[in-house]
Image (cartoon, rainbow, N blue to C red; front, top):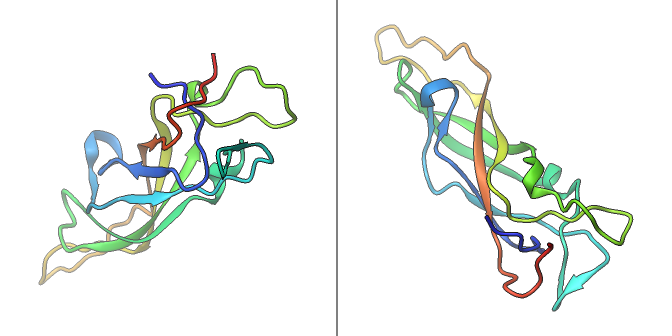
Length: 144
């Protein structure tokens, strides 16, 4: 697993399956970027520090479930980082984010998916959990 530091504008990819046994499926592409706010730079890019992940959001994502096949819309966010995505030792006030394995994500329903007509019932679940990954553009600086 990569120990490369995540930097400004690195790619954030959400996995398509959300909920237990992938009950909800978000329609790709599920890609956005992260904004780095660290004071330190790698090249011209700010490093991403803990807390930057809280501002990642991908609105307007189409989703459906196994029982509600008429798509609804949702917003994807990062709920939390996995422990292997936080640099364990840094010489600054803020921990930097590293690629690591998978972060924990949330699919928050904006407009509920529905069952097919004539019933047309709303999906009663308002949030689903999932995962995602970072793709680093920095190929030089790693943490040990």
